[in-house]
Length: 168
Image (cartoon, rainbow, N blue to C red; front, side, top):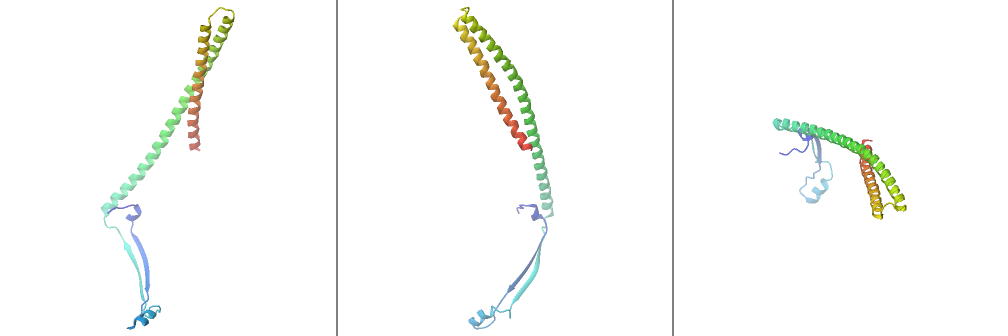
């Protein structure tokens, strides 16, 4: 027998009452007319008690329900722990990305100075156009790296923002 809930394991007491009106006459018409009167009515009042008798099954089912509840609690704790771990990991990644961004900002600044110095040298005729273009390419690559880091920081920050909203 399949048991769907813990409520089915408990004893159940039901009360009931019925009233039946009847007509008693050999003629059909009189019988139908008499069935609407209370002259020959039948009453029934009672109670039914349902008690499960398979005590071994009941004991095992109660244990399984208790274990299911414990499992659900442990799963909730694990999910909370995993969320905390992921939030801490994202916070660590955000710190690393910020330090890389500081380095990238310094690199952009240095590459800009190098490019401007090379422009001055190019105007004086002391360097080639190819050398100037190479320094300009270096500056562009440094700026591109900085933008990529800023994009990564925004992604991590957005993920951290979702953790803060779910915690509230």
